[in-house]
Each structure stands twice: as structure tokens, then as C-alpha cells.
Image (tube, rainbow, N blue to C red; front, side, top):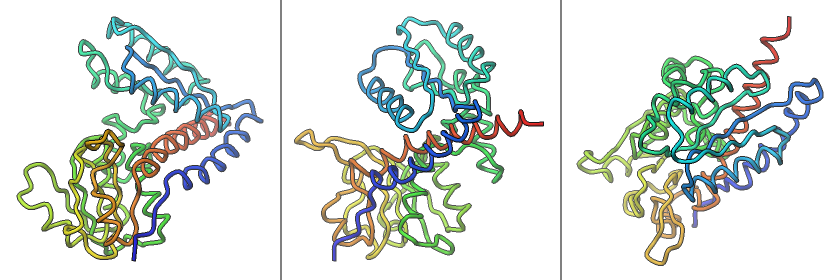
Length: 287
């Protein structure tokens, strides 16, 4: 029996209805959520991502401030602009689109963003909150993956989850979120001798390595949930993920497509974090 398709497009649309409702309530109290999106340089993919984020804000009633700078912008100037946005009470979230030009240190940029406006969830402070289980912003892609898993109705308690990939933006926080949900978690990476050995035992597989056909049908436990974070191109130039989709679909219980799976959820969770930042700011400002 073919796997159930976990549609990130459909789930993100459902979540955005609630985001728009919460944003409208804040706006009615003169507290409209505000997101600043900064793009440095002219990377074509980054331009597309930024346009999609700005449009998503407009669709849900979030005010977006879109700032574009030449690739020659100095790190000092960028940090000064972030500092000004940190002090702006109408801005609740700050996002600097990556990658940055080589002369700008991304770690310095991320560190400059106030933790209460770090809606990407990339800062050391946000990572510490996630590690310790404290409230805080979760990185948008892993956060979206968790929502996709939740939508299947599976309880992660006592389940075995395998994360393939150990990046700071997806793999590591994904493992921590699964651990918080009481799953037993294995992380596989480029130095894991036999990835398939671990994946074949998994009730949930999250593939996030950026290499197509990393997960094949012979590696998947029948009925497992497969979340494909990858974004690649096949030999024909068609968009695909890290999972060999058609064969794996014949074995898995549920699977995300590429496109239309994790991608839409990443932007949606950015909107969720922005609205939550605005709600927190309102609560702090209310006597």
C-alpha cells in the first residue's frame, strides 16, 4: 500500500489561518507584528526566498520591512543596522538572509540579533534554550518537521527516530526536538559507517543532508514516517529531496513530498515565531 502523503502545503495553509487571526488581534490593539528581512547581495535563490517570506507576511497580516543592500556592504554597517532594528519597538523579528558575502561573518551577524527577536532560532541563546528545554524560538525547519510528524497522529513517546545530518540549523535541533517529544534518537552523519543499519530500525526518519537518494527503499522500516528536508535536482533538473521518493513511498507509512513538504512549513513557522515575539512584547509592555 502506498504511503500517506504528508502535505506541508495543506498544513501550512491551515496554520496560517490561525497566524492571521492572532496577527489581526494584535493589530486591533495597535501591536501589529513586524518582521525585518535583510538581504545583502544579489544571490538569485536568496532573492526568491526573501520574496516568498515577504509575501507570506502580507498574506497573514504581518508587517514586513524588506531591506536590500549591495554585496559591498560592510559588516560594521550591517551590525549597526541590526542594532537599530533591535531598538525598534515595531519590529518583533529580525531575519538576515543567508548566505552572506564572504567578508561578513555570519556568526557575528546572528549574535548581533537580540534573542527576543531571533525568529530564525539560530542564535547561541536560542540553541541553549532548546538544549535545556526552556521556552524560546525553535529553528523554523525542524519546528516545521515536528508539526508535520504531529499531523500524522503518531505519538513519538518511545519511538525510535533517526536524523540523517548534523547541521546547526536542522540536524542538531531536530534531534533535540524529537528528544523533547520522548523519542529515542540516533543521529547519522558522513562518518557513520552504515547509515542503513540505523534507518532500518527507525519509526521516524528525518533526512537532511542535501544529497539525493540518501534514503532508499531497502533502508526503510515498513510503516515508518519519512520526513525529507533535502532540496536537490535530479539528472533532468527536476526538484527532488534526499529520499528516493517513489520506491520509499511503497514501503513507508507516511512521507513528505519534495516540493510541497517541509519547504512551506519553514516559512510558516517563521511567521509563528514572529507572532509569538509580538505577543511576548505586548505582554511585557502591559502593566
